[in-house]
Length: 140
Image (cartoon, rainbow, N blue to C red; front, side):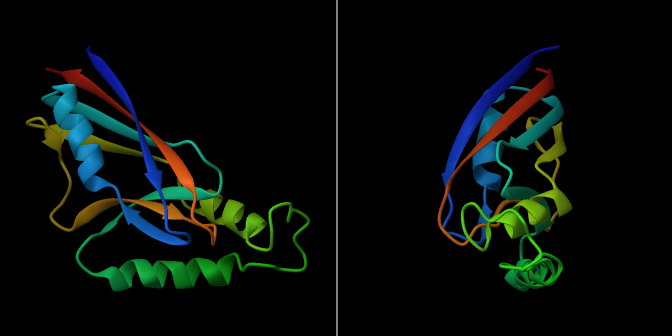
């Protein structure tokens, strides 16, 4: 079964979401796989990936509000704060979400639902460079 792998690099603007759907779709098209699976893996521990509503930005804003309540910056009970008050909170947020997505490929395209998009969710306040590995495998 053919497998194609590509690394994608993104620069985030700081805490919040970055739509990476087009770049992942491009990697799938270039892979030439007609039917199979696409794995999207984020190589970081203070950001995550989400498959989310792509038409209403308020959904992602509300998710940020929820995570800020679950893992607040600067909690005095955190032992790990090597890179500042958002350090441990960012790690907790990434553990509560995910760093990998698996999406079916059908007819050479991601089989996403009508309102689904792939987002890189930065949990740190400052901008960061982030790397994503896209692996596509299946039938050409």
